[in-house]
Amino acid sequence: TADPHSKEVLLKYVNGNYTNYAPSQNHFHSSNFSLEILSTKRQDQRLYEYIISKDAKEKVWQIQLEVYEPVSDPNIQVLSWALANDSCTVTLNCTAARGDNVSYSWTGLEASSSSPCAHNGSLLHLSYHLNATSLACACTASNPVSSSAVTFNSSACSFEQRGESPGMLQPPTRLLPTSRPALALQGI
Image (cartoon, rainbow, N blue to C red; front, side):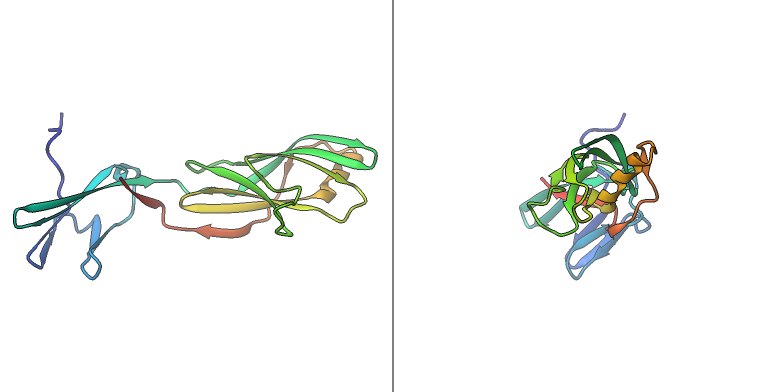
């Protein structure tokens, strides 16, 4: 077993000079004293310490590195339909097949906080009049390192009227794709 008091030193900086003990794993930026971990892997997720020693004083910062799998393109599944009095009531479920710590949010494409689409969570219960103009709702699946979105158009309620069964809406339309490096640092 490993000694609980031993530490792996990645870099040492003394009197303006530094020694990088793992140059294939990290890059030290002396201009701003940041340490970049290259090709982040799951094994890199752990607690790191940043120590500055000067004379008889020492200052220690602890940084928890979290590594996340980016979110895959989400899919919207129609869980239930109900048609009555020229209104459609539908329950939608938005899911991403891959990604860590995924959260879901729904928004209307008209960007109003009072939109019937505005909701946090993977499930959306939506009710709208069939004669109204088309209602478009976007589901965004996100985590700290990425996000991806797919849209649902209210005209999809007509699928049930034609006798087609509810199910997956394919193919997804991607909106606002964003991607950031797959790591996040969190100070403790």
